[in-house]
Length: 601
Image (cartoon, rainbow, N blue to C red; front, side, top):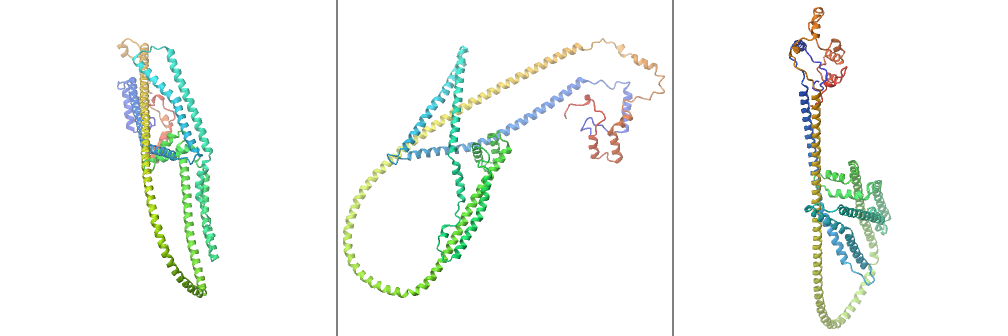
């Protein structure tokens, strides 16, 4: 109990301890065993302990900061790995899309002289190119010129003193501010145009086409036309097949309707705006399941992209999006099952009706075969006689026609050979022209790719240089803040030393200065003499020794003593319950503040 609270009343005592304490107090009255407390030394110990605890706290804080920084750097490294894998894929997709667009525009040819849409598209592309070049000259070129001018001025200032007048520098600052205001106006204008274009695209109602593709999945024909328009010789069989199609459609329509109701309960964007939802989808598509710890990574990236949203909101949006995709997948699967069952039922129905038609046809053939057998035999005899007469006439005509056809075939073969030679010469010339065009086109594409590669490399070098300048600027700012912090710390230490010096001067001013008087120090005091005169009068009433401790009434008035005595009588003073009860009971008087320790162990 004493280890838990230094002010807890100690109830475990023994009689010999009281006797030893009494003897020590009795012998200490006339001896010099107890020396006065050295408060300065105690204060130094307390200060050392406090400083040690502060140092330990600082180490713990530094360790926490280092662990947090390490964790943050690890997460950022993993994000960079994901982006380094995603960036080439996006670049390839962008290059593929641009190449497809260029190839498509190059392959477009006008249908005739009246087809002006192709020329209008080409003119529009040239106008866009000129506008982009004019925008670059009006916005980007002034910034680069101002940057080059400032770099040149800074380079001159490194080798010269500040000899330029103040008005000259004010003009430079005004020019910089003017360029900043101009760039802000341009950015605001571009943002307004972006919002207007976005509203125009939304106004085209593309969402209807997107939703129509999903609705087309459930447009399954209830009863096929092959069953309705079929000529089944047995009406009962046709009615049973139609009823089977009805039951199949009703069963699947209920399932599709329930899934569509679930989709209609939530918005297509799950309650977010289109831009945020698109960024959310793109972030989830980057962190695939093959990446280790992909869920923690994309949740961290989503918290960085949407700092205004809590983790709970992001998780709810993720669950809503997963549920929507799961419902759409279910709807697609149900539709596919419906189509598969519909096709299987249709195939079985067609086979059944075909078998019924064959059986009915066989019955009819059996009835008609015997009736028309005689008519067929007579008809065949007449046809045989006519066929023999025709065969004789055909043999004569074939001989005449064969001679005529042979002469015509020889003339035709000769004409075809001459025509084939002319066609081959024309085809060779066309092939040569085609290869020349292909070669020129390959050279143009190679030159364009080289120019694009050079432009991208220049942009990347410029971005790298800017990043280096930004990093250097941040390092300089960090060094400046550290120097300011050190200066403040030195100023605080100097003030603390001045304060200690002033306190020491005050202590010296109020210190007690007394002359050394050994005789007076060792002599008896007046009070002691007055007590010694009356000592014989009170020898009988005086106790054997004086006790500087609590009286029995004071001890019994403490509730902790009474509770401990009751627990002891009950035999529970060594149990955990007794320790808990005694730790909760408070003393009748609160302890003095000077007995409390501020040290934390």
